[in-house]
Length: 156
Image (cartoon, rainbow, N blue to C red; front, side, top):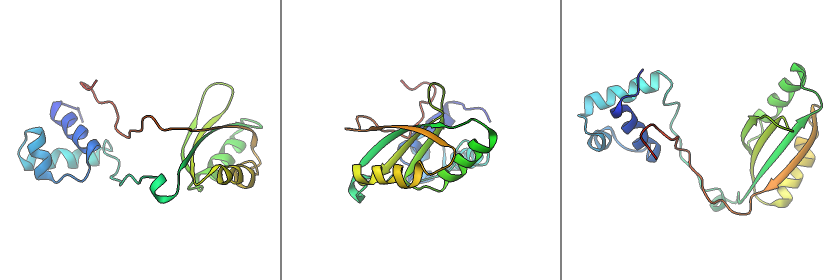
C-alpha cells in the first residue's frame, strides 16, 4: 500500500489520538467516512497500523523510575542470544529491548517504582540469566521528551 497524503494525514491523526471515531477522522483529513474507514482498514490489514493502545502515565500509577540498562552477553552464540531474549520477553518491567551496536549487545528500557526496585530487578532477575555477562545502568533524572508517534513524511 502506498502512503499518499490522505493515508499520512490519517496516520498522523491516529498517532495523536487513536480514540477518534471514523466521522471525526474523516473530518480532520478531508475525506468522507466510507473511504476514510476503508483506508484505515487497509492499513490495519497491511500491518501499517499494528494495534491501538492506551498510554498510561507511569508515575501516576507508581512506576516513577525509568532506567536504561546496557547488557553485554557472555557470548553471542545463538543459544545465548535466544536464552536472553526468551527470558526478558516475559519481564513486564522491560518496556523496550534493542539489539545494538557498540560495546554492549542490548539496550533495555526499564520502568519500576524506585531505585531500590531497579537494583532488585537487576540483581534478582536480570543478572541471573546465564547468558548475561555485564550490565551498565543509567537512571533517568527527567523525561524531557516522550512520543510514540513516528515522524511521517511531510512532518517536521
